[in-house]
Length: 215
Image (cartoon, rainbow, N blue to C red; front, side):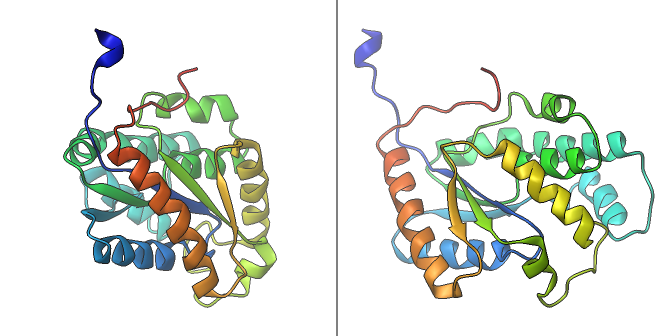
């Protein structure tokens, strides 16, 4: 019977989101190390993936070495996620947990902050794998701008980041976990470990895949 069908154990898709310089990359690295030490198979991913053909075009754009129409760059960011989708599902199905630094929510937040329609921005993302957990590292744009290295890339401008923060607020729903990114690094790490481990254990018990924004 369908109701008695066993769902296979799998890895968890855990996404960290937030403004530039919120600390995502550092926390992703710490979380990967923690899960590995706990005996889990885990990989660190980030979007854009600048190593693919599409990713190299995006990297040039972000470094201000090239100029593209806002809609064109949005579709490139989306294509960058699609070119990794089958590998992502394969990894998760084999039991590997993926800790992902930025995902579709970044694409929509940043592009809609430029004035593009939110629904239009979401459309090319529909059907990508939905994360099992989204963690938003919450920091004000002003605080983020005070951090080292700020301003090195195209989107690291205070007024723009303020609009990105507003866009994130419209995307955030009850399933997101929000952590104060101004807390000491160790305190953020502790909170992240707990909620991530709960998610990993749920997926190991056999949680069905779902897809983004199909409802």
